[in-house]
Image (cartoon, rainbow over all chains, first blue to last red; front, side, top):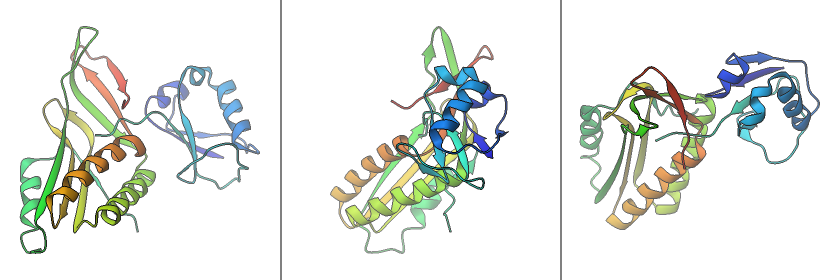
Length: 75
Length: 143
């Protein structure tokens, strides 16, 4: 699955876009990302699915648009 | 279709003037309120911010900005509302956010403008890298 990466998190994962194998749900994806990129453990970030903020856990599909989003700084 | 709220580079005074001028034919408007966000030259750990480099998750940001705009128009019965945010490197002293709200009377314009700016800062995936005069950087976070 494709994962978009933004802001300071690009420095932790080394790229603005990741390809990783399909994860069953959001919690598993978060754990997998922490495992692969330990720098993320010290970061505050949310994962958006199909451009929606997600509270709690949801099932993921291969064609979902996943994005790692750090704190906002607009304005 | 999502409206595009972003412009590359700083927001220039002419753009603000032109936007205001374009409302002169809407004669039901009695009040405009404007917010301008300016890049501040903070001194952080002895280093001076000389610019902020803005990026965004643009597809999601456009949707959030449109949602905020529509919510505020509905809540305050605004005549219209406009939001422009910069992307790219904006130097200290330049304008990076321009919000213009218009209504029949002043109270709605004042309140809507303030709430809209707060929501933009809280809900829109825009990211800012503060660039220091010594070449280093720090990622900005809205409080």
